[in-house]
Image 1: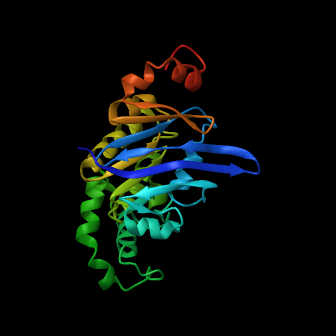
Image 2 (image 1 turned 30 degrees about the vertical axis):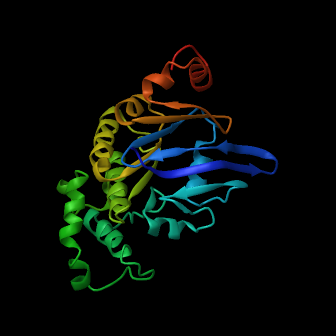
Length: 250
């Protein structure tokens, strides 16, 4: 039997009378890569902001591992093991790849104002930091400043700093946005590899990435769930074709 790790119940968000998310019931199963897709304005980003507590819902509940997290702050949700990449993670442009990952590992210790410590203290994180750097394919640029990295590799570094928090569930907000074909392939392979021991929920516009990575897909349109299923099921749905593309192609 599959286990639901994250669920929403009638999740709704209104902004001055405009309903951005309406009665969304989402079920994400443990150990899967689950995509949230839909046309621009479908409510995907608002839904992500609700799940990671950057917004409070107008109504509804969010449950993570059986616990109601609706009223929790973003930092508390991260401590429980649900982390949003590129939001929670912080990349310092003028620090090296290794230094960025070491700081992220240090944050995991829970000291809020504990960034600038002696070299001796930071060196204790080197072994784990180097392993994370290798995991995201950045070993060849370990001493290069983040600001000097190409866009795709900078995103890989951001994933490494997120993984340093050892999340049980990772939320990725358009991880391949703005990338060329080669970087898309590299990041997709990275997402596949880091999903081995965790659950991933991702908003993604690149449907070939969704097709190749995701076991389950939820389609949003106008703030509501249109349909859900595997890629073949949703891509063959006439309503999805119309809502997502506005044409006969999904």
